[in-house]
Image (cartoon, rainbow, N blue to C red):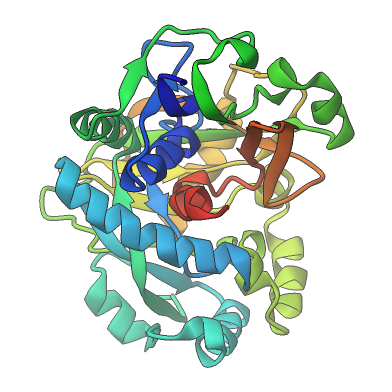
Length: 357
């Protein structure tokens, strides 16, 4: 008899989500992680569990379920929730038209369309020339670099065994009835043929942490704006998105060519997490570019009336993308399967994915 019912390879958010799902089913679970801690895509992100704007169908359904699980786990594991909800601010009339259509669609359930005055009242510091906003109650935001280790400790208390610095090379050597491989971008380590077949590659992003611009500056919600309406498929599917796309093509060529769309989150210590950009990368390019950071900061200044911006941290992240989206799931053997989120939505959908057969 195997020592474990389930072995999970990889302690990023996808791996930890499968470990949690297994523990909730009463399975004996072991997690193998090649490093001393999760240090790649799962901790180099906003910790933003995004529901509003996700593609209609499976992705949105998974995001709603994952947000609910995050709320449950955060309380049980002592993970601080830094913000709830999202405010999508329209700077242009064309963006407000997209938000108006979205609010009227089935995806807009429980969302509130705000005029400019109401949006500024909800979020002080917004510039006076905004057109309006959409307020969503569905989102939850944690600090990813803190939440992942806390989640692992919570799973240990639930009886999950962790084997850190355990570089698994052969799945056959794992002493478990079932194996889930959650390799992030390292799909080729376990199946080079699969990585080639789905054209697996990387998306590189740049993010920053800024000092609080003012001790009284507080964002009750994570904030997004016009460029996000083209990157999130739920918004981009609205008929009005075509006019917004045309206007942004004329006004925002540097932003679009660098895949920039503004997300602003605030941590409990007042610091702002700001990003991000998107570039195709053949490999894990570790180098960020000041010009890209400047574009992101210019977008921040265009949205908020901020006098000074002091950057405390800058980092580069990578997440896997492939011709198979939003999730790559493949049987490696009768008793092992590989799961890889290929759409940059791991934090938003992994918990629900792990519950699926």
